[in-house]
Image (cartoon, rainbow, N blue to C red; front, side, top):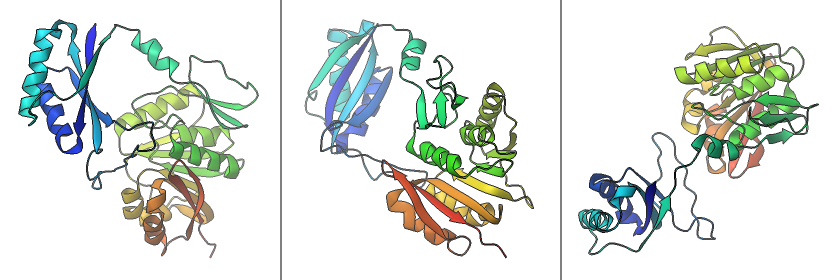
Length: 300
């Protein structure tokens, strides 16, 4: 049994209150948008080197305490943390008991099969495939990015459904869980290479490929010099897509196609400009504020 305490704080004090609660004995602390679910909700996105400029104007600080911290002990912890964070008094808060649960079962209940197209589904191992005649990728949530639920992954999977032809070659740069490479192989690609800078991601991709009985080549870091591919897909982040543009573009075969995602709609021109000397890109699709950029390398 634990006790969850939710306190209200303005942006300029939320982080200080979070740190003070940890110092006072909280087991964990998180900060959320107090306006989430309303018209005043403010989504925030960031990536290394370009983090959000600040927290939400109205923040919700949620702290988890051991059940033994109830009553006067909890009140003393909250008072101590509030003083340390610069409050004159404990800000408005609510508390509730959090019972022990089967966390594995609870987590699994949050992940249902995901329809990408009528042709392609992502199915967690604990579910039956909704359409046995479709291409079904068995994939469970794990440490590596890519379960099919994020808009950028969906955008790339939809592109692969449209462009993969039997026997074509595919490079998935930033493969994460391996979901894009697995999809390409199941859709009929004959030579699929996945690359990631995270060794854990490469291990996860290898395990997921085995589970789905597909043959993927997997590589930790680097881009294969001299080898080109009919299709190149990179679902990473805007800054790496710009910095790595020459290296990635060089791996697209003449007449080959590329899809880039992990890009917010406000960042489209930045990536298009970085790639302009190499490949002409355009916005192919968008979903929930994220976009997919597409292009084709000209033939000589």
